[in-house]
Image (cartoon, rainbow, N blue to C red; front, side, top):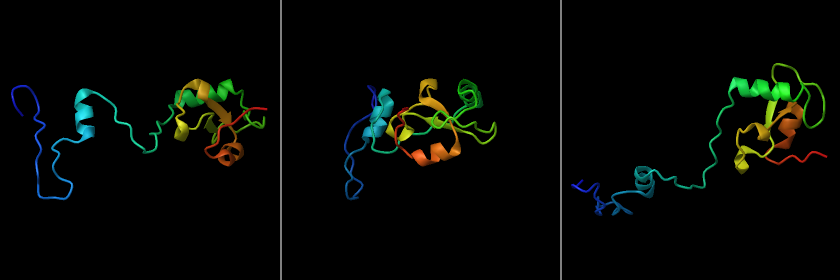
Length: 112
């Protein structure tokens, strides 16, 4: 490191592919930037308060088939799946019975 900040000099450890002292991820992190990757989006667990709000908002009925769901073991479904960029925003969460949610996979639901 020098007086103006980190050095970006090349280094060679004698390893194949060696020669760059700083990876893109490290530099981006130092600059406060996000690095896009092809890895799956990180799933953020729902808070218990969110799960309760979804249950109450869904009036205890599956959004997809209309069956009443048990108060324990119900599913909270992402209308737009996390794997496709969906979030835990309340507009994206629906009360679902296990059968409907597990049969959906990573598809997006469209209500008829």
